[in-house]
Image (cartoon, rainbow, N blue to C red; front, side, top):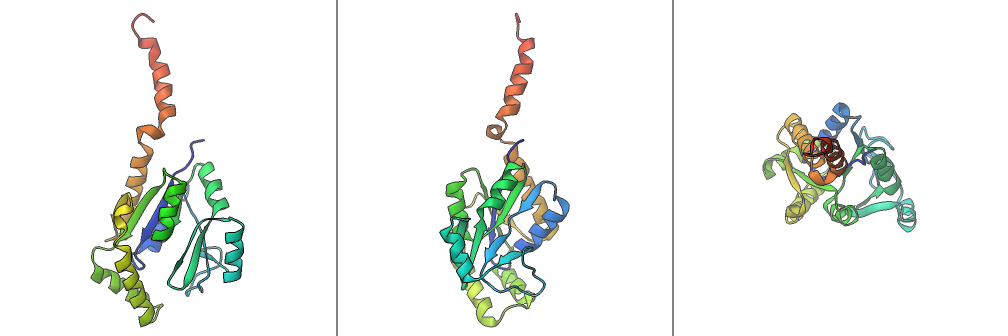
Amino acid sequence: MERGLLIVLSGFSGSGKGTVVKKIMESHADEYALSISATTRSPRDGEQHGREYFFITPERFQEMIDDNAFIEYAQYVKASYGTPRAFVEENLNSGKNVILEIEIQGAMNIKKQYPDAILMFMMPPTAEELERRLRGRGTEDEVTIQARLARAAEESEGVENYDYIVINDTVEDCVQRFCDIVETKKSEAARNMGRIHDIREQLKVYKKGE
């Protein structure tokens, strides 16, 4: 079975990553698996342990670091986030494309471990739209909103290290752009050497004199 693709998706907080990924999983569940991160932050309204995140204590988080159970981990706005290693490898080996929704620090570490990973950065059309979306969530106080906007300003300095930029103007268009990028990557000649070999063997019967 062909190994799946590892897709690292980052973006400014409020860019709509969660909404886009949810739509992808609803419409392409047979092709994609979403890696669930562990985090030390508290759940937001409607979030469930084991669905959006594994909500764990800082002590448990440190234990997993010590056990090398994360592919990557990072701190973001007073909370820690980590990607469990076992889930990612199991799904890649089963042929599914695994989406890692992680921060920019972790994305660079993933690329070192998985050179073939696709790094995508999602952003809204404008900074004004980013602020509007953050405030529209209604889940955070002013101090946290300002911290997220300041963080976005810092992250904008490293976006050029990603393979692709995906603008999230509407969810439907963004989902299509995401899937198109994945299909393009899967069509690269280097990822299809088995098929190339097969057609060469089949075509040998047409060689002159054979």
